[in-house]
Length: 254
Image (tube, rainbow, N blue to C red; front, side):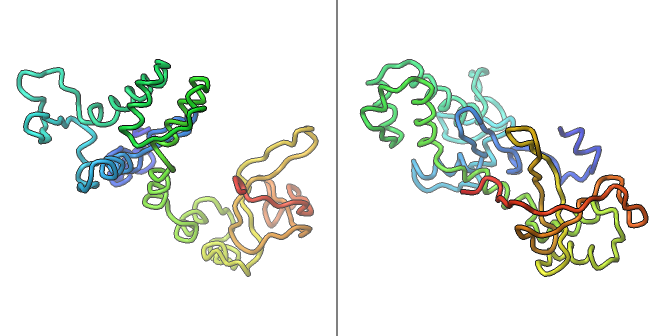
């Protein structure tokens, strides 16, 4: 991934790395995710006040925690070459232990462990199958996906601020036109322009649902629009057809 990114833009500020806050660790199977900063914040919430940013900076790379001096070092403590790096010590080991306690199906030991983590389950939950129980425990352990949201807010441009570069990269029409100006400003009153990024076929495979972003204007149900194919140009409208907007959905909305 680093090679791909550096090949596109070698700017070191665009380097992907956990300590920069632009990498999230996640399990889609168990529905949890975290960044170094969000995990550091969990420690602060559990053990009291600490510098979350400074702690998170020490959770990646060749950094070790000396349990005797209670200090971080760049080298493993003398006489303990097997000392785990800080990421393993503070994140992976606790996570592995939590997994192991749940998978062991030893209810009393699990209750003690969860009590130390301030995780409270209803008695009936301990009778659940292992996988559903593990998902419930991890859901309470990690809480909401604040790490992912923080990463998005900090590192991904807002639709408005990112519109300028997006239009420059993807719009093949004249950049000086009124349409391009409207898209760069995300003008809701401008001409309707929607960039379709994917088509999903319906369950009966008879039609498609288009997933896209409204670049300018306001899209409404029953509106008449022009669907432009890849081969469309103002001089040759062969790869174009008129259509009616039959339905509108907000993706992943409630």
